[in-house]
Length: 314
Length: 184
Image 1: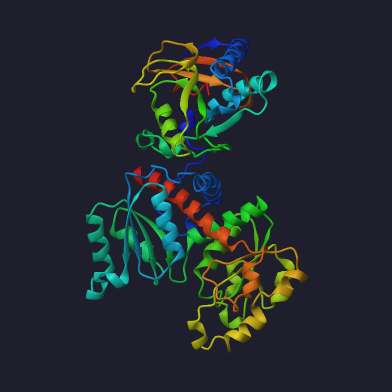
Image 2: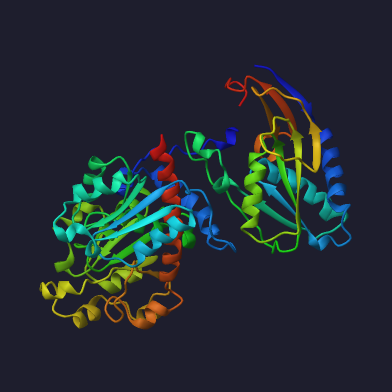
């Protein structure tokens, strides 16, 4: 009976961002996720653990990977899933976010997974409803499950991340993936370098507690892992860099880099712009673990759903 | 709080030997037999029996480890979600005769969830159940095929199986008033 007591007391009702989670919380999630990963390899990759839970995926912003990954995780755990997308909803008729979520909650739900272009929406939702809220990306603020799956993938490579050198390359100012990763990686004791053109670095970037580099070669020579970020194509119109081609020239990872610096592994949160953040061959090379990240994403999200489902009941 | 040692290391070793013979007895072809230990203490008991079988009878016996957390029907009544532990079944269950091994048989709910869990891995030919201690108080129509010892207990007592690797000794105790923290 005493074996049913968990080794770490996970006390969170929501997952709004990694800023609220301690190092012990993060390590516990990553450790538990290992066992969820195994379910995906079973002949029947499905367990009934969350069969009494109803979960709404409230996606105001478009997404393929994250939404499918969450839905897959929910279904693998046996939960009932309802999907909401802005285009097919009454948002068009002018219904507010608060009214929408309160109406959905009236249909008896336990958890909400949300993505929204405005930072702070998940926090706002916690004040509107009783259900547990999981942040699947809010503006340029946080994307905690992406960071967790990135760290999980890194742990598969290195076991322990303390002292490991992680480079994050690309559009630092508009990326929520950077923020969550930086917070999480620092808690686990890794060293992070942010690399990109000056125009894509936020103001006061030094205060984030990472090394800053404007030189791709220097960064690739230093790092154990190079994580490239997607260049949102709409940024080009904002005049933040001259052209995609010039960006690729200065900050795209190319095949000669792999030969020159044989020590680093390549990650990317997706979706990739082939020929911008990296050459197509780089993305498909055996140095890239991009598809492992996607598989791991399902396992990590299963672990989160499991732990949050426990928290919300207390 | 009182504790009583009901099985010593010597008693346990004798029982492991008996289990080894009992597992093998109905089979001519040992390759169709598989032993699966249930997390946590059941794994160690199963490993003891496995060692005997490997040493004296059949070296490549199928062996696996099962964690039933995902299938429990009682975790919602506890306050926190229990830790998930490793499940590793490195062989095809199809057509195998399985022996599930656990430390204590009590309400029968854990065995029920273990059978559910096993079905997700394939369709075994048969499943038998082996436990070190049967303490009674079943809540489901379940019985063990191989039993170390039967111990009549009260509901407010607890049976503690201790193994060398985790607890520093091989022994089985019955504990009164288990909420007392002096006996961890």
